Length: 231
Image (cartoon, rainbow, N blue to C red; front, side):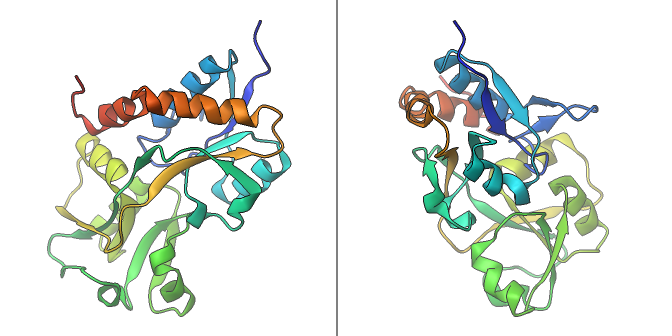
């Protein structure tokens, strides 16, 4: 007998390959769907995917309207203690993307007075104070592809993203200029899923994630999108 559907928040602001949406706006694939479908299988359930903008994710998780939201980090939410957290699923290297004809970016000051492409609703702890002090211009877009197109058109000076998204996207799309990907100066952050404390099965959800990680399943899925064969 199936248990109630797992209510999972997945926004189309999640860059590929974390979430892939069809032309009609339905979640059709990506790392989020791969992992959450397996979590639901562990729970003997199905999944209802809720397309929730990043800015509304925390309230939905806090209220229990969504049971799980993925690819987060406690440092990226306003009140991490309001949620339960999975084990670290993987580490994600943050990248600064620039045009190959521009100067290297090695430290925060190299971004001063530049326009940096970011994603709506996402938090960038290393740059936040500079955004507040207007030392760096934050310029939000809905997708990484849009930001890279604007970078190619010289409407941006740099773009913030993560390794898995950038290398996947540039393998799928042709851009008019060459890009350089430089790692952010901080250590790669861990990536987690947050589970609503209002869910009556929150422990079962956390245990399902733990089993998938222990089996190496999550690592194999990540490597699949990196294009790395896994034995």
